[in-house]
Amino acid sequence: MFTGIIEELGVLRAIRRGANSAQLEIGAEKILGDGRVGDSIAVNGVCLTAVRFGGRAFIADVMAETLTRSNLGTLKTGNKVNLERALRLGDRLGGHLVSGHIDGVGVIAGLERHDIATVFNIKAPREVMRYIIKKGSVAVDGASLTVVDFGPDSFQVSLIPHTAHATTLGFKDKGDTVNLEGDLVGKYIERLMNFSDGKGRESKLNISFLAEHGFL
Image (cartoon, rainbow, N blue to C red; front, side, top):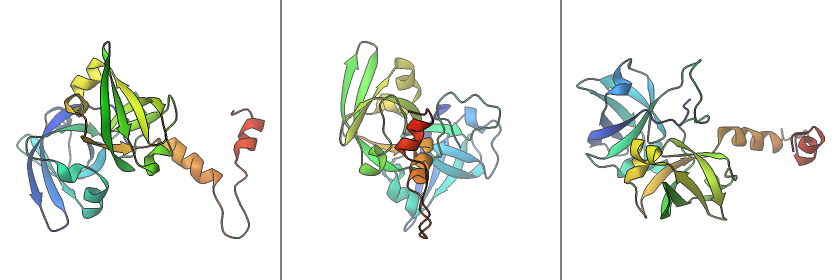
């Protein structure tokens, strides 16, 4: 589990490609201090397992499913990547709950400067848009951001200068891809509201129930 608060910008030192897999060597500094083999590290929002450490870098294997569902397969040597270690119990939850399991890949459809902020318009697939709500949370390349507004197939997020400087988003441009993960809490609510055991028993959780009990 992660929070979407990027700890460090790493650099892809090498990528070794297999027939349907890849192995990434990522240079880093801060996150290596207490790193151990088997640790979970989010790379551009994708939860990967560190299989080896050494030379101010860590190695992670990427299977075919991950390459298909994220933009990690498009990385090139020298690219910067967002890095975050797994959340520890007792840590501050500065962003929101992020699982590191990507829902889909979005495309930056436009960028606009509004005073100090940069507003990104991100075109996203349906499996992401179903969890987008105004003022809700979304992970973009692993960074926890607040949704400013949204339309049928896209949403907007606004970056302050610190976020642009501390994450890969500051290097992104129109047409670039980003890994997207919808709010974890929303997914559980959706599952509970649509639950059916196939034997006629269905969830009692619905909009009327939530309104009746003061949640809406």
